Image 1 (cartoon, rainbow, N blue to C red):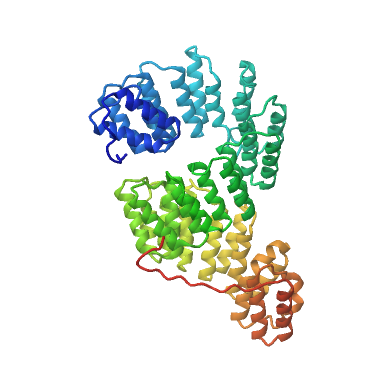
Image 2 (cartoon, rainbow, N blue to C red):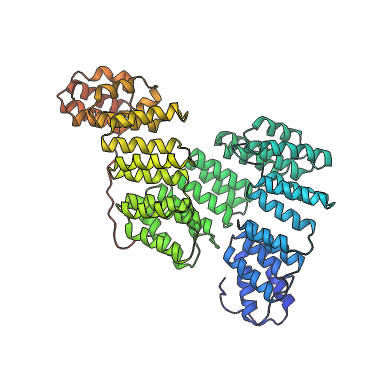
Length: 604
């Protein structure tokens, strides 16, 4: 928290409280924190009316460090036992994902209101700790407290898992809600619809939706948001248009869902239309809608519009910065991402885990070892959490920047290793042609018995075998993936298998594998075969030519050009001309290539 200068002298604490509370109610959370800092600087200290609102501002902005300072201030002022202050701080900790601190406050409270119980249950629900939330529900009922709608909000939110693992608990809550007469309340119905949509039970969700006597904006956006989560942008946009025909008012959530659907469709005209509707609705400038809009533009590859939206956000939160960084990274503008990250640090904004992993991805893509080392140093010096995700990103960055030894150090020092961390290190060895080390690491992972290899692990293993000429071992792993772990091969696995065989000169076997694949898969795996065919001078396959076109069906310009050059290099001009004719017929144009060089400065 930083004060932006002193406001005119105000000696009344109630006046400060009124201004802070008004800022929070208006959603100006950063301004409310600045007011609080100015109040403290003026010599006044908060009371039981100040701290709950300041804690709420910290919760909304996910500012755990600042929230902890507010907690310390409240203790200094003697409000450690105040039920309203403690409940607000407990809620702040849970919304900042600090559930251990939240539970400690809950356990220390001498008396608890229903709001206190609901806050803790809601914290567990948001953290998908459904068993812990049900345990608290049992304790609450044992004390004679009757659950209300807010209790159910916290409980049901924990059952909305895409995997559907908590669906049985959700069904029991639905039944319990009917028994208590709460299921007909609109907020509960909306949450149940959301739960069923999230668990993939679309028909059940739609049945509940159609049974609603009255549908609020939330009801509609729940269905639209459900379709967005399921990746069905067409249904999402259709439902949005249906909502508009019903003359339902738009809010920030409905507009976020709209722009998210546009992101899925990748349609720039739709994103522009959503922008116009956002302006008409007066929602431009709000962080949530603007963040979603700039993300939509970035997904549609319009970085100029995305940056304009970013620059016009009056109060940029960490999600704004991260969305813009991700937009640059995903569009291949790693250098601009690095420049923006440096600007973020100058603004004294604490990066989130997602921010750190995003910028490390930019360092990896751009080959910026120096910047990657600075990011690691920043994480350590600011005592940011070195989660598995961050460590995986660091390993990936160091591997791609050529520092395999540093990647290995981070891997071995990691106290907890998930499957992504193991896979990343295996892939790092593969990148550096250290196939034996990759296979040894895989065997070590299996010996520990805690991690079950997934599809990505086997992609990395096949890559390691490919780059080290370990063809026999690669075949064994490809079979083991299916027989021992029941993983169906994906395009990536077939690509790795064909690449391994082709590089190893086993062109006959590679061609046989390709021709047995479905057409959709074939189009993705021809490039390694054609490259090897050319480099091996068509070994054993001198008769390979245009008659194989029915099998190839290449769907991208690169495959056409590679095939044409391959045939031309062996003097098969008729086949080469046929490829060129097909390119012209299908309107393929080769895009010019680009090269990247790292400079000492990064352009923002």
